[in-house]
Length: 298
Image (cartoon, rainbow, N blue to C red; front, side, top):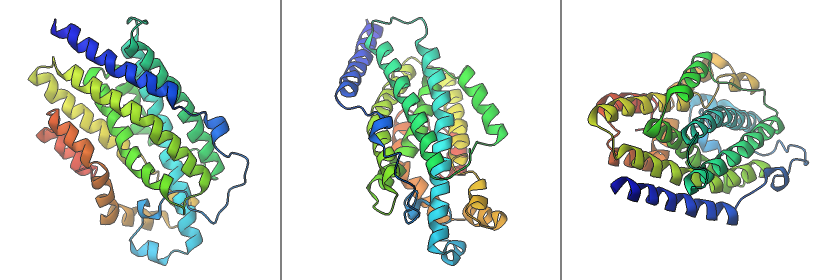
């Protein structure tokens, strides 16, 4: 009886998301202005979100260098987004494999995968238009991601999905409203924020649903797995190559970025709602907190 009610609740959430997707969805191929040449008088992201904002190096940089850096950083975040969206799609498809295709959860999952495919193409085109190379996470992160997408299931998969989406969501809400950011990037961010809000609702619902029947040992193990995945995702967002592409001294830039308390504070504030959710799900265990603190998420 309890399982049936829980399944019905999940289907109710999925049906509402399907209805939302039918009402409000975007086609980036036509919604984004891909034809207008890049205007280098604009930033690629809100300057306050730059890894160097507030540092001595930032104060020494010209406005043109600052704008180039934020464009490269935005492209790096987009490239990391593509990497994780590919992991996400595989986990979701594996989760619904052989499940009832007539159910709303199955159909919503495919809808989410379709949206993620469009987002990845949108991010790829956006990064190219920003004049950035193909940024990729460190080889270790790539291999960890390969393992994670293969073995993660249930709450570990959906909570990790939620972490990646929530962190991006807060920064992109700032960027899409910021008139200093190049218009086509603002459009990309708006599309992503609107559609990812549905994905986050589903991930939260699935995390709660999967945890409902979890024992303490499973909760402890998956809390740590989610925290490690979160650490890898967040620390992979800005590739150190962005500094070279912006014409900066890479060694100095990396050193100042690592010590940048302003950026750490921005990351913590962006994750306050996420941390509240993880705490309510009893996923902020002591071992997990070590990784969230190292990633400056709490």
